[in-house]
Image (tube, rainbow, N blue to C red):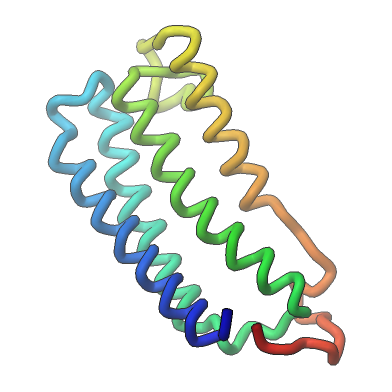
Length: 144
């Protein structure tokens, strides 16, 4: 994958998540937990915009090849799962992972477990750190 191809893919996914956020907003009145539906709407729109902004500076990010590839996939995963966890919580009315937005709602055990899994893996993806994250990458940085 070349840097320009990665940039194009990040923009495409950013637009997709942005549109998913807009569509989620259209269904808010019919969701089991409308408050979480609004959270999914806003979260999807913001995640999509953020991913597009990351794509616009992607070629300026100087990291070792392994870190750049890892970050590419983690950005995609975190952007999709962040929206998905909120939307599933709105559809199912779960509250274990979304205690504030889900207050007063409870889902079935499997629904709570699914939302928990998606939310926890989202958190793990955004919490990932590597030595080159703060611009201390070595000179072995190479394009995809």
